[in-house]
Length: 110
Length: 118
Image 1 (cartoon, rainbow over the protein chains, first blue to last red):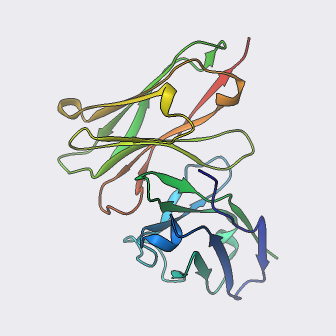
Image 2 (image 1 turned 135 degrees about the vertical axis):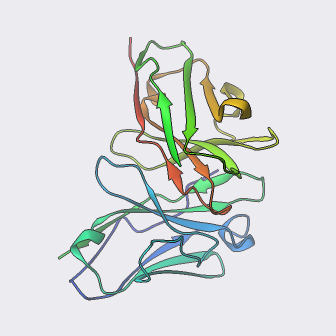
């Protein structure tokens, strides 16, 4: 299975909003509402930010939101803050009952 | 809840078997899925496989022939075996669990670096 496609990098100024895309196929992202997003700071374990396309775990800031259209899922970070600078990965359930991660996106706060 | 890997062999030779185990601490709870995920140096995350509370497993097709994941519910512990390792298996290995939410891994351990080199 091939990794989901994410932009290598996205940047924004503090206070701005940015959106990270995650493109798959009808056999993964497009076929199920089981997309999750993870934030990973350097040298740290990933942290769950969004699950089931748009749900936030308890304790995650409401500045993070998720959505999906067709075969593309998106993570939006509003009110960008310095602490949001990290790598972000999407993850989707697939038609073969497996999971596949995205290629990862580095977010830079200018 | 906290996941903690037990210290395993951090350096392996090609063709050897990678063995890791992970224990959940922190009281009584139900776990939807227990998973292993790895990250080669400087690269992205790769899902290895999972096991649910009933012992049913799913594996990454690219690793399926070499991977075994087992669960010991009496110890809240699950394990990973990866046979016939090569340099391409060099990575940080994470154990993760879906505890409070079914649709994502909300509990992770700190990760263990495993290097394969002759």
